[in-house]
Image 1 (cartoon, rainbow over the protein chains, first blue to last red):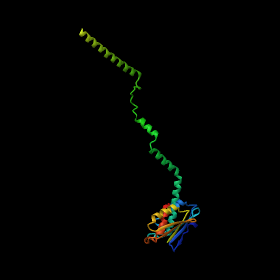
Image 2 (cartoon, rainbow over the protein chains, first blue to last red; image 1 turned 90 degrees about the horizontal axis):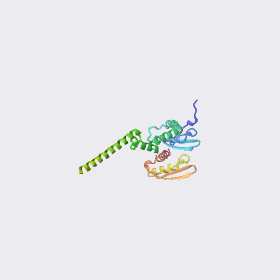
Image 3 (cartoon, chains in turn brown, green; image 1 turned 60 degrees about the vertical axis):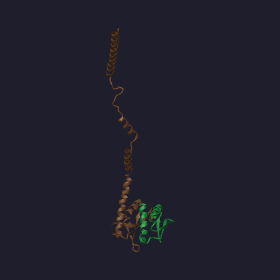
Image 4 (cartoon, rainbow over the protein chains, first blue to last red; image 1 turned 90 degrees about the vertical axis):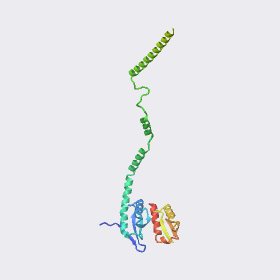
Length: 170
Length: 66
């Protein structure tokens, strides 16, 4: 038979408050804070006790609250406490992978030096050949000899013109 | 006059001080340290909030703690 002595609620009829204890060896203090935070809009909550052993939760109904059934709220509190504890455990388990994902995202968001250099190289007009390095010897030689012939022809033509002028004068 | 005792191992002083700055228009507050507790004395409480101020103040401190 299920028998849990930690699941006892003490009701104070004078103050209209309900009191119960939470074992901190099972539920962590941050999980208790987080759970209490979620209930602040429904009830007044006050914590006391010895955080190394147990926390005493004192709940008091708000005057304008619709649901004044504190014992059902206290049970909900336990359920939420379990939920928060699980969230905490999952968060701890996934801490490293979460940090890794964030680090990767930040790394790719900020351009680094290697990326800048690669971009500079890509932007450079490396396919043009202003010095004619990629030309074969034959092509380069043929061009050179053709240009030499052309200059020779031009100088020969000039010589002929000069001679013709001289002959005309004489 | 109202007195609230906050356990030092559960509540921190900064949270209490922050709550005081938020509530100081509604009452006058003073903090004393007594062994394991911060004792907050609340005087001159605005009549409109007299019934709920103590509990709302404790809730606010807990909210800041979370």
